[in-house]
Length: 197
Image (cartoon, rainbow, N blue to C red):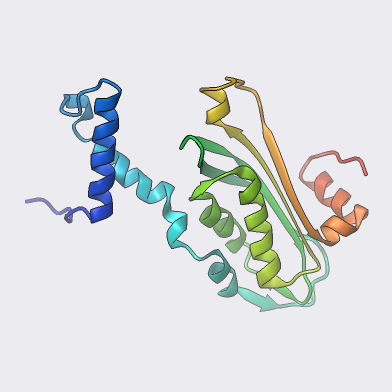
């Protein structure tokens, strides 16, 4: 007796779409190795697109503490996995997030959770960088926020220009990180990036 529950309407729709794609490229969805592929893809999309069910600002709001800390808070090397909205191919890398508190701090584990909530959606790296920065700025109202993302895009590596060693770097600087060259420089040095001002 099976313990798995019946698939949702969304899961059924994804399974049917995957079977259609398989047939369209000349494959047989009934072939032994592909029999469960539509089901597996459907389940994997539950993870890959989980960010649509998340509330990034809510994650932050539930872990805010009043603290008179006025030094930079930095979480670097946050692993990041997302999907390019143009080709539905993965991009992956790391994210560095810093803020200058203005009377409020947030539990450190919430910062990677916010990165994941935004990255587990169809994205472009530029927007992802900005969304993370603005979520922190809007929720914590700090003196400034800095976000840098470094990522490799399979849409550039496996197709198109096929440049396997290319690395896309995006940044979003708000408040003191934009206005104060010393703050921006300190942040960039801490994440291992040289910056000329």
